[in-house]
Image (cartoon, rainbow, N blue to C red; front, side, top):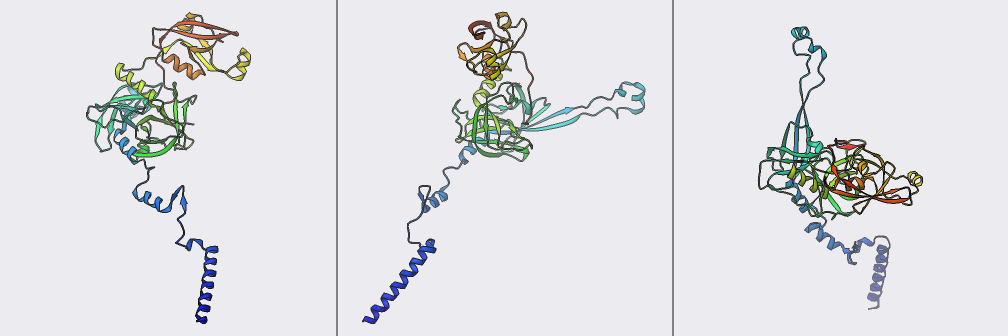
Length: 390
């Protein structure tokens, strides 16, 4: 009996020694130990979640947005400069029209967003600018002709109309609901490869001074936006429209993680005016403004950098008639504080022509207020009607 106990003790000792070595050098071989935690969940729970679908999937948001995003194909004829010899009848008699340049057809590709079931489509102005023919291609491969209802070069927005009904219109998000860090999807047709969805976050809000449009209040995102995406939808994680993709910052022509979209609040305001009146009406007082630099603040004796310096006043314009002079610093419009020149431009543009506006002015360390009769802003040219800025 003692012999068996001795054998048993030796076996247990060897087993414990082997177990100690395995625990020391190969602990993952011990299947009986408690599952390791991953981000607060056990491995089995993570596997179950993966099998049932990730809660971070944006498939439902994409499925909501994709039917409302269309491809916009445009064509226009461009003729080169006429050969001056064509004005000579003798030259024309012998050589005919062979030296007269033939018109060339130029095609362009962009995207658009269906905003109403009865056929209104929102896109970029530069996508349809000068187009002789516009075709809209849907995600189900249908194609319909479209016409331009109106466009606004200063915000790079345009509204198209097609003869169709019961269209899958997108849902607009609430204004100012977007936050830095929120997930967003960019939907469009980059490089003509077909309907594409890219994912990113909101990198910044209220981007101005980019030199893309006259009126700027861009959403910046790192969701990939490439040529052909212009006019497409930027949607939130539930598929609601938060912006219209407009431009990219690129040195190569491709996405480098800095894209810009026009916020839905501005897009809706412009769209409704175009549908109602055919164009956008903005206020104007006839001044040229610039931001206050530290040097200008020191020279004018200003304590804060808020406000905008009036660099020029149009002779006989509304501001000139009211008594405003170059060198004044405009600090408020109808009681609304002016922080910089972009804020001032937007505040004045939002005034209705014909109404009287109260402009607060700082002049030589004294505060003054002027009443200005607002006029209608003259038509302006687009600053940069193209896909990218360098």
